[in-house]
Picture (cartoon, rainbow, N blue to C red):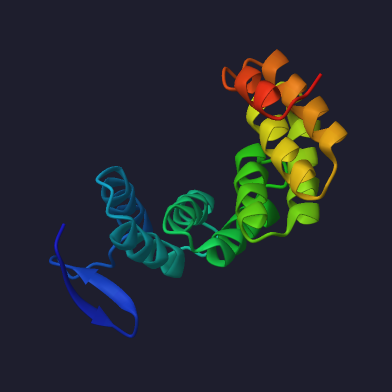
Length: 167
């Protein structure tokens, strides 16, 4: 479908009908898979403009923002997802990761705690919480988390435990 015009913010296809939000979302997915994260953000933004509660558009736009190191924008998108779906573990995990990149480790730890409460076998949540705990000076807590990450199947946890002298 070809987008030919924008009238009052409403995109119209070549047949004169409104361009569906889902088409923008799919265009965003395609751009994301191709590694064009800026284009993906633009497409997801159009999907969101047409369907503000489009959870997957917010989630995937957040992923793209994270890839581009636009962590504050990523946090905003993941927060929107959590507002719509409070039990969405990937949104908490991704927001926690972005918060950690912003140096907001206490908030990141709270998000990783939430992931673990939803899915106690999420090795990535334990791993990431371990790094945030280490950043806040809690080496013992970090080691406990990395051990839990190893039990959950994280193949890198053994090396992390060795490199951080966890007993």
